[in-house]
Amino acid sequence: MKKFENKVAVVTGGNSGIGYAAAEKLVSLGATVIITGRRKEAIEKAAAEIGAIPFVADQANLKDTEALFTSVQQQYGKVDILFINAGITGHSTLIEEATEDNFDNVMNINFKGAYFTLSRFVPLLGEGASVVILSSIVASTYQPNSSIYQASKAALNSIAKTAAAELAPKKVRVNIVSPGPTRTAVLSKAGIDAATADGIFDQLSATRIPLRKVGTPEDVASLVAYLSDDAATYITGSEFVIDGGFTL
Image (cartoon, rainbow, N blue to C red; front, side, top):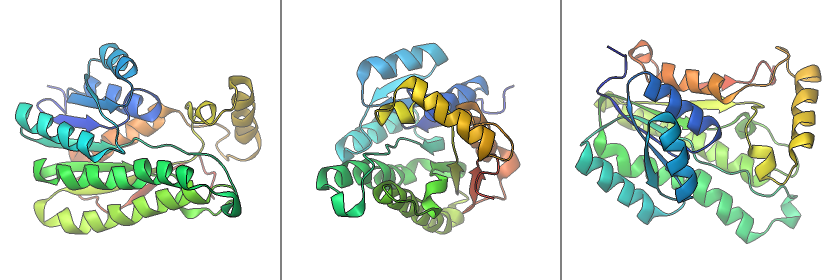
């Protein structure tokens, strides 16, 4: 019997990158996995590849989140693993050049969307359930041109710890995973071409990361699976930095 057999998992933003890898890992361990994404074609393709169940939903849209909740409640009646993963970096700008549109886009997905995904799914989280929230090492860094993205992740860390305290009486655990540099499509989504992105990652691994490697989505997925397992039943309210020593 696989360790997550008879468990139901929901992964937001599961059609690519870390969300895709986490969903694939959870499926391989026996879980029934529902993955969400904004683009119907992309989410259905990803689900077919890994054996997950697709659900078209925009984490920034509360009506979509509530529709997702209703569907999961009606079909499964519970959620054992909730991986709140969907997020964007937005545009890099100085504070004085910030736009309201960029602020709203980032905060609506990364913070508001994550918050209300957790909020709405609490009734389906029973004893022993695990919530993992994808943050980032940027939550505790203060680099120029990244104020909005950094603030969105810092806000996530705050609500995750509050949620851990609130849900502990239900024996529901809430933990944070904060990756450092990871080889995903995040740079290309920010408008950087593939060759330039590879050069950035190679430079980081050669000069900035003590373990001399850039993380992969699969590295993060393994940590998400561990935090969702019975081996982690005494862990809640914790942040796990997975960055090869980048922030040492």
